[in-house]
Length: 447
Ligand code: MV4
Image (cartoon, rainbow, N blue to C red; front, top):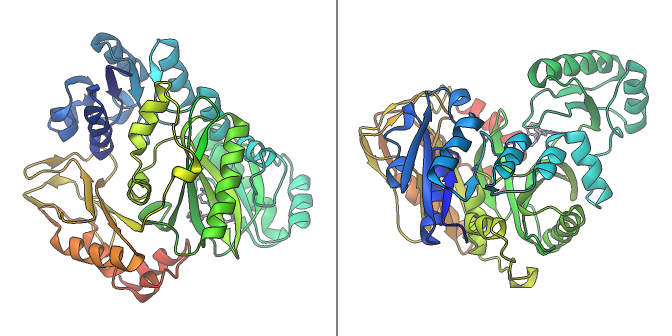
């Protein structure tokens, strides 16, 4: 097992990784910008190295500075967390070339899944259902019109280098298609330096359902069930739950088996998430995430499996040690993302936390680096805490969520806690009756 792990991230996820390491008897190295001198993960880590000024480009994205910190501290491995360099194939490759272990998949798998056309073709060949659409990129107006006629309108143009919704354009008629194709290419070129786009049938009212998988270096693969992440606004998830209120056990087992077989066939290893759109009882692959995800705790809650510990064990060469039949799903979990933002306008509100009290009690978990007196720096993502509740049933989880939201006190800044308080009273949400567009309409109704 590793003796020392460098945590190439900040905030609650850096703390989360530190905690897994500490339990495993692994020493930790925090790397941080000058804006994070007082961060909780820096205080708790065994060692800390300042790697640059506040700007993420010069610190948390500074590959050379991070590798230097790993060298001078004698770390064995690097955990990238989520965001920042977590899905940067070049970084994963550099980490390995410098003799450290990258706690995640291989650089080749990150690269494969980072290009959405390559990813879609690879998972399709491995047996995963995909959204009907073009084979590969659409390189001319004629090709766009031909494929559009083939798959039927409305269609969606997506950037191969995109993901997370950037560079997507809907065309409802052939008349709109050429313009949408041109705009998508221009946006993709400007945003990613790669103009390649592809086309899919546009699904109007899907849910966003993602399967968590774990794979070791010896071909063993398990799935840890799904997460329903449909409640999002401008491609930012707001609340996630597991299991999905829309799936039954047969559907879960069916898509879980397909996902595991595909992962084994691709030779993928470590943790991964396969994202699907789910509409009218059918799954359609959209993307694969090759990192630990923000919402991983709800999967931990219903399976009792520590995903970060599993990532570290797998990276160290340990076998999974259990099979799909050993994975037991218990109850229901919900995560609320708490952002330092105005709950109506969603404008970020960094600043000093003057008072802080986190909820607790049975079935309640808070992942956060906040403390009273902490100053939230303005340079990074506004997510400051995750409230995760677990119950034996969805209703029990909801009861716990309402109770713990009521206990949560964050003073001195605005947060999205009031949004969550309204959401948990809404009858559509309580009934699990929502799709990927529902939350944006809810926010409009409530402003
Ligand atoms: C789609 C879609 C409808 N049809 N693909 C948005 C982000 C990217 N990961 C994929 N996205 C979508 N792809 C087809 N063929 C609708 C979306 C989409 C979406 C997906 C998941 C969660 C939230 C979303 C919000 C808007 C659009």
